[in-house]
Length: 456
Image 1: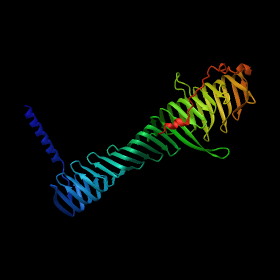
Image 2: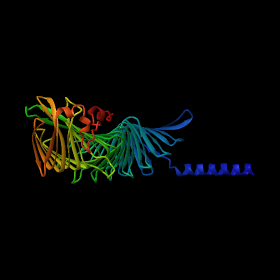
Image 3: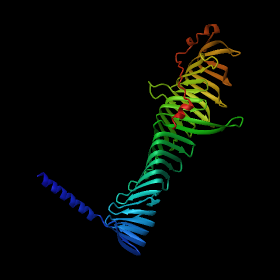
Image 4: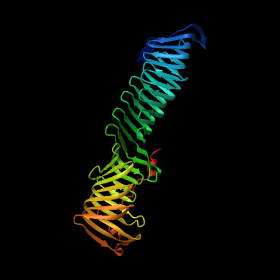
């Protein structure tokens, strides 16, 4: 029985193969001159002058063709133009495989389907699948962008381009580079992987990461995989010297919203660095049109945002940074606010102030005034000719401190002020006993070299 079944199976298989061959239409080739010959036991027809090859809805013209009758293939030479409906493929030399309905060229190829123009050093097109595979110096043009790659698969029905190797996509507002990129033309949506970089032409911003999702129609971009934002700004000092300032933001997830809000979000393990300013927090929103950066405490149990400016450290449930002419204008620390400053000559001594809220005003890029609002407690060390001279411990409802060259020149206390002086002999060696309840000295201040390491 097994032998009979084998015979039946082979017979059915052979019948199906014959039927498939019968369904495959033989290519037809005509021209000014036809020469028939046998080469290595195979029937070959050479066609010269005004050559036209047809198979179904595929038409190919060229100067010279070699038709392999048994294989149902043809070699095409000189001014090759293949057409199928609105699709036109041109090359200097190529092949057409009739059984597969595929054309191929390694002599430079151009595809134009009235939606995109695709060029490469070599490529092949599957007419029945509406699929192109182009390789080496691939370029895709359409009305909104230009894409470059080492290899590209173009799916015409889906309006989809899958690019790999040195991928670059350029549009009116940005340049995206990556190891690979999957682009949908209809929705203008792109997904990129590996060494992703987005350069914004509008605001001189670059974003790096290993995974990208870009939705151009909604103007939304997501980047993950060690993402880093870098924005270069140039400013002039009071001495008219050009200074290049770099804003760096890293997080687990970066999101860009370029609609009417034009904001940028950083989520989880956020680190920010710009000049003397740095921050560590869990959630940051950068309002680019307003030049405002807001950091949040995301839950009751989460750690507070930490902000450093020069030798000062601030913490609070949320911190707002206002920027004017590319310089920090104001810092607002809201709820459970705390500020400390470490003396550079006496690093064990910290000036400290706790309050409900803190507002710091800057002038000429230096702290001018600090306002402490709501149940203020402070400890400030005193110095005489830069030598330590005890400290004062104060409390009030509100307090204002005026600075000059980053040094305290005036302290104003409002609402039941109280102050105690502790002489140097009580302070020296006992600095750790003069710490306010909210004191915590963070040592994880972001460093530029560490953030730059995340950029490959």
